[in-house]
Length: 158
Image 1: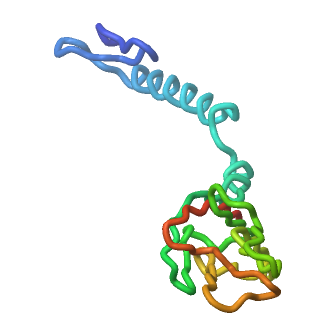
Image 2: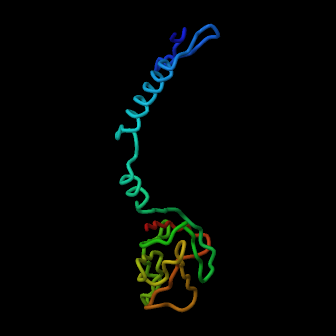
């Protein structure tokens, strides 16, 4: 005898004490469960395929943020991965700002990519390293990539 009660969604048997379950009842319930789960598992619109998962796991990693300069000559900023490209820039400053009649400027922006880059910025394991120069200009420019109190933005991608 089938059960007196049935579940709402799949109509599975819900027996009460006076019901007398039979093998056919269990087989019927198992078939309903198998069909329902089989349809669900096969639905490619609601599940991520192995190819999709691999593509997402290989997606570029991106980090952006800010740091405030502390005047240290060298400083490494961690972004949680080793970038392939990075750019840094000072907020409210020109990338290169001439400061005197001798055309010696201050550099407030730098880029680096895959082992090369402008003066003052290098890719490092887990982030990037900046160089800040106080006294001796390089190519008639002071590197101002960690000037005390200046806020710098960065964008890194791997």
